[in-house]
Length: 167
Figure: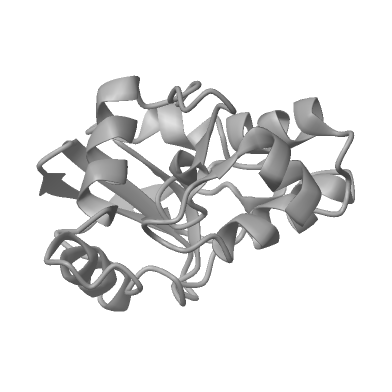
């Protein structure tokens, strides 16, 4: 039986943030878009299901509001559910959750934190394949030269998030 997923969109200064969660409250997808469909394509097929829209997602929506209000650690304990066939990506995503707000790391530093210092491209791929933006904070990874690098939801969103977290 396929789980019913629940989606909610919150207005933020960086644009709409849509979160898709399972019935257990674990975030399965999140991104700076008002559209649910593009988010579902990021979710592993085993974690997909029919989606119902709700005005809010209880503790998840509460954590987003607190984060936006300045409690930058509010998103840290929100459960997430991502899946892939490999070993490195889930590990890298867990490592990303330990990167603190206001303390961005470089792609090289992220690879080192993940235990594979030579795997800079793999670290970048972990950011690119992250389905739960904000909760697994790939926006906190920047280029060695201080440039923003890439971000699925746009560099303006990444710039806003990093600025919000420098407070």
